Image (cartoon, rainbow, N blue to C red; front, side, top):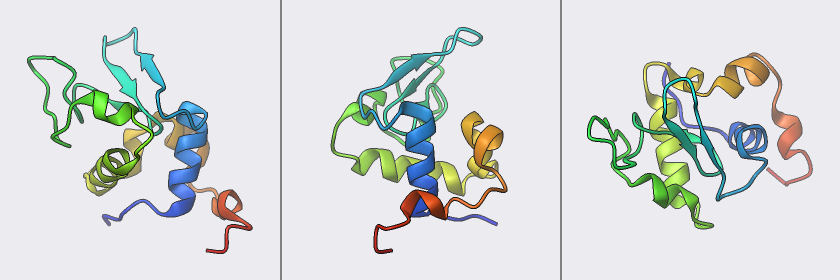
Amino acid sequence: MHHLLTLPRHNELSSLGSSSDTQATNCNSRDGSADFGIFQINSPYWCQNGDEGSSDICQIPCSDLLSSNLSADVECANIIAQDSNSMSAWVAWTSYCQGQDLWQYVEGCGV
């Protein structure tokens, strides 16, 4: 089943992946790719980071994911969530969140 990210999932991913830092980048030594922004969206599959072989599925430069304007991040994260692998695209999700009740991350937010 394909679905958009819910608010609890957005909050959990931003907390685990980047400590909610919109300018976070992390290099993956095993494959040379990098993770960008608050949701740690990976190149070269999801965004363009100058790699010739990039799939660039979100059709954005990875640098767009480093802005305090989260529009590109949310749009790309929703594209990822609708992919056949869905949330398992994020290692932090499968390691820490999958199957857990995440509503605690928005408790008191009025949602």
